[in-house]
Image (cartoon, rainbow, N blue to C red; front, side, top):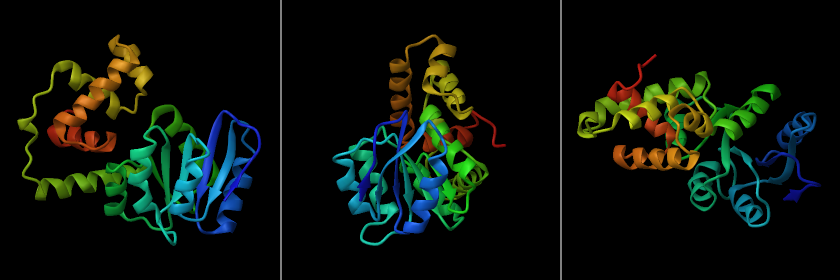
Length: 224
């Protein structure tokens, strides 16, 4: 594990067991003035130890690592440090895995052959808007939705949402940030966050990705 020099506007930790991959990402992101790599970990256990001493904005988290993998450590980090954005990295395009990880707290999902500009865009978007949705995640979430339709006994009609709650949910599906939603509906960001938490509770969703699945399933937004 390593930590680096002075703070920058966006602090990033890379957790991956391949030193060459970490070095490549670090080199590419070092060209961005608003990004600083503040630490590295080779597995989830090292990452949890590192988080006791460092406070990143973003973690680039590999799914497959020895000792403790990304799938295991993801919910642990979200429980301990809910404000940290987590971008999952993998060599595999597995829709069921993507859907599962997004529902339990991942903020984005990228394949490890993603170009450095895509990784940078995901970092900035996750920091600014909480989630980064791409073709990969959208398809995976819709696949997850189709599976839920076939297996869930839950009916969206069982949940009653106010017009304001529906409007906020629609804006969330349009990838608006909390501040943007607050400006549109003339509420404080804290109130919007409270409504979002209430929506999660009402719909039984664990994350914003789960809320989006609910919104599509219930017809609040169209399944594009």
